Amino acid sequence: MPQHHRYSRQALVPVIGEAGQARLAAAHVVVVGVGALGCQSADLLARAGVGSLTLIDRDVVELSNLQRQTLFDERDAAGGHSKACAAQSRLNAVNSAIQVHAITADLRARNALQILTQALGGRGEIDAAGAIIIDGTDNFHTRYLLNDCAVKLGVPYVYGGVIGVRGMCAIFAPGAGGPCLRCIFPDPPPPGTSPTCDTAGVLGPAVAMVGAHQASMAMRCIVDGPAASGHGLIDFDIWSGQQRRLLMHKAAGCVCCVGGRLEFLDDAHDEEATQYCGSDAVQVWPARSSEGVRLADLAGRLARVGHVVQNAAFLRVSIDEPRSKEGGIELTVFADGRAIVRGAGGPEAARGVYAKYVGN
Ligand SMILES: [Zn+2]
Image (cartoon, rainbow, N blue to C red; front, top):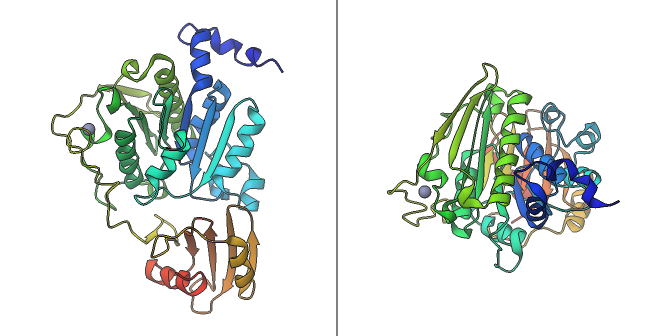
């Protein structure tokens, strides 16, 4: 299929043109979090012909995702597929002329820089032209971690957030003289003080609007360069139709991009067990850094305690546990050693389940 024809309507638009289309083809965008926002921006960028896309997500597809996570369908939810892999296979079918990479991982202080560096260019040599990180996450801690990585790597970072009917988005390009996330929002809100999609809900159209803005900001950054890509923060209410654009400036006292302190990347207290907001699921990391888990070996051991389902990204076992409130525990172990424990009743108990069945 002649690829030129594929993008003809887009290249006709004066802000893109043939030169812009060539820049898109040479670009590499990393989408962190392939949930509601990540699905939107990754889909638009794949169709627009961004030459290389890396999709990073820690989670698996569930039925309640389908209302707004547009790269997935009921088969992905029934099969419990990893979001990164399900999105990759969907985007490969959409555009076979680009490279789509999938990484099933949870970005933490301990691994974020290594994963992003490898995703963007291999052995520490990132071609900053055309490299962009898009935030599709749903939590403040990962956002501030991504901001630290973006400052360290000199790569633009496209922030997005959505809750209920409201959305917000901005591109931060501190490497090109612009502000970073912490210039505008110096610290994340304390845990439990902000509404989340689990507690306040979210409208699909609000998600689509933020995702569209994020994709557009990334495209403009690739085509016109980070310095020209605008430093405004867009804030809207999709129900009332109100929208504001706030100018952003580098903060002279910013601890991160001016002071050089990468507090979230240098976090020595990287938690080992975190309860997912609004659910009975707890994420557990191995107590010590590990090289990951040999899923096939573990599946063999766990077959004695329950029914095991395994694929390349993770294994899942349902364990009868009379002491559990739900009458059973579901343990999902990923190749990087991380696990999601459901039904254990809290972080401490989940750690215990991990120690008992996975070890470490
Ligand atoms: Zn800053």
